[in-house]
Image 1 (cartoon, rainbow, N blue to C red):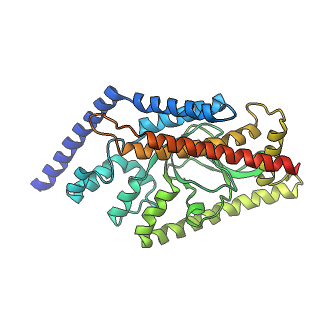
Image 2: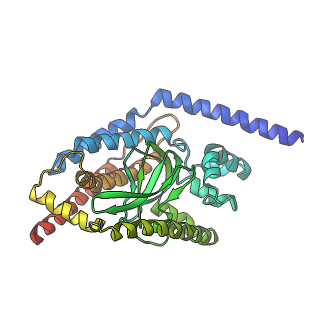
Image 3: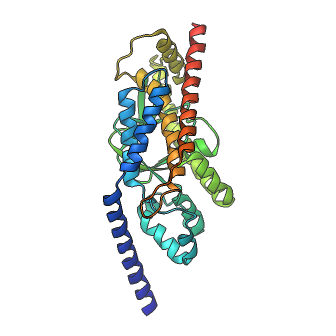
Length: 343
């Protein structure tokens, strides 16, 4: 009994002091270094890009990473940290339980409690995300890049009738997840998900999820079965709603057809309002690529972060990221050129 009481007390004391240290560290160092790197990076992209990056897109990218840096619970922890690897596994488990207790409970059918190593490996892949009202979490027909775990806010699932979103289902329960079926079965997303309010969430990138599932085949089979059942249930209701639209004669065309039309209009120089759905889709194509590439740059850079705030220089990583973005933008230009030739 004495050991149990002493153990809990000692763990609480250690975590209290640990959080105090992190809080003081953040107040002292802040995100100024990372923000400076982001500014330089965006400036470099703008300099090499043929077309200036839209101001609203730049603002969204800044908002995205500001939230990420402020809510990353693993800022000062790395999975391969020698200190973490050296401590007793029970204490190691308790630290991650302390950091992600809300996620583990809300998403308990995904973060399976046994074996503990499976849940711990997934925890180190979690990345903070937020979405603004009317922002798409997923668009049907796209490849899912991450699994999204809803922690706060309200979203709607539905389908796109040409450029119009038709809502079918509403979700606001903490722990709802999206994108797992598409990733695990290597399928395009079958429906769209839109934020109705400010949404706070966590995400696990596609490649990171595959890395963990490959190590735990039994748990992978369990999660795949759950994802399939959930997807079938949602798609049944989505298809009922879609059939009703078709029956009324209001179906205007597929999402893929809309994208081709938008690309052709953009190449032809058609006027698009800044807040139009078409402009949002065009910006999204670049935004997703930019965020994913800089996200990889950020994850690499985290490995060089020391507790004293000293950060080593990694110009090669920055240059590589810039080169990738330029290549992506060139690819988009080629798509537009092909559409222009067709028209």
